[in-house]
Length: 589
Image (tube, rainbow, N blue to C red):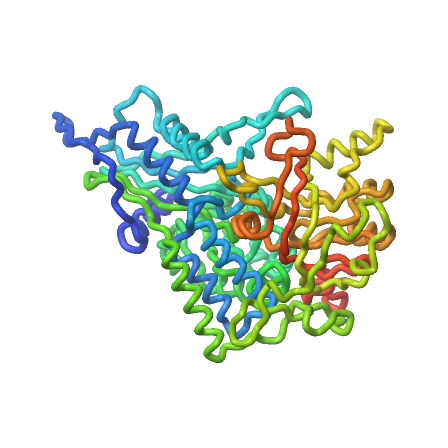
């Protein structure tokens, strides 16, 4: 009999990581009590401990990162191969982690779907008539309520109707029973942007030939783009006894939960280190970089090989974004333990180390992510700096663009039309927060022959914040994936609306064509830096319209020096289409 069970291999990996590799700290919660019976020794767990553990964990992961993760970002930032634009984005992400560590602003505005994996030993007994998921969800709800996190879950109603659950329920939980006296857990918050990049293909054995696999993976990496907030933790699964098992392996691998699998082929699941190195190579050479072009598209890669049916070769690809929010927890006879996160002082030291490294001679390399026609961009704005280190400029030195100098609905000013794709600028002035639901409603108004609200002529920022903490202007605020709004752009521009857009990631050709035809522009902000965006770059906020849309209600926000990339200029030039990946000479006929 082969010991090749995927479920068993997953649990072994999680247990090995928790016992040997992860920094777990004991929580001040009562341990399980001993219960001796004729059937042996059991451990009785007070259900309130599950609730408190869940509440503590989900709050901790919304405001902090494990130090090892931040060290990965720092390593990318100081790498000799990093482009100037890579360094700029990575410095923003580290500064965002520091801003969030104060416990006021969550790291990302998309505080995500609450997800839990658990492997419960059969010697652990929860002293409750309710199942464990009930108690974990109560703790999750407490964390969302007390920390003013964003409720993002929509419940299906009849037809196309939906409503927000209002409290981010339901919890997505997968709980398994195992042998033993320990309860291993992984709790996470998964945002929509990274989840939307999950892919599944049904292939054949021919794909395993090295040349074909390399070409397949190169296309898959190129198709990911940057709208899910790199640097990514890439996860690939090859095989699986079902499509569901393949994608489950992708999800767990993206969490690092399968890191302790064997690294040599055997009877069961194993980590393919050779293909992991290939993924990192392909990501670095793609040109996408850490959002704005360069080499830092990926911070890690995991490739899992799985048993499969002879007639099927499922292949799954997924990722974890820059808002890498998951923590391990363990319950056993010795108490309740939770993975630690970096304190503010730890991040300060890490940033100081980065500064010393750059000042010590690791100068930024030529920006591999700049537009192909470099002459179209002023030299000093085509190669932005990462901070006031070693003579490099800070974000405050970027060219300033005051959006209030433009009359909404009028042709763009010369100050805007003179900007070229590939420039970094500082945006200030009034913008309207309007994303998916608001755009759908605007389209419905047009279809009904009705006029659009006056605010639709203002610059549209595709974003929705977390709830506002007392004494703050706004909750965490960062861009959502702009490409989801592509289908609305031409319709809005035809009636003088939505000419200036702000979001994250690349757009489709329809957006660039609309900008060229109607004189519009699209700016891309750094994704995954919502705490920094709210704390440092918003000076005023007002609920303006459609409050019934909940998190997607329309708001007017005043920006203050928000760094952004001119991604599509008023001539329709698309910066992202000029990266090495998408250059015409590299396209396959």
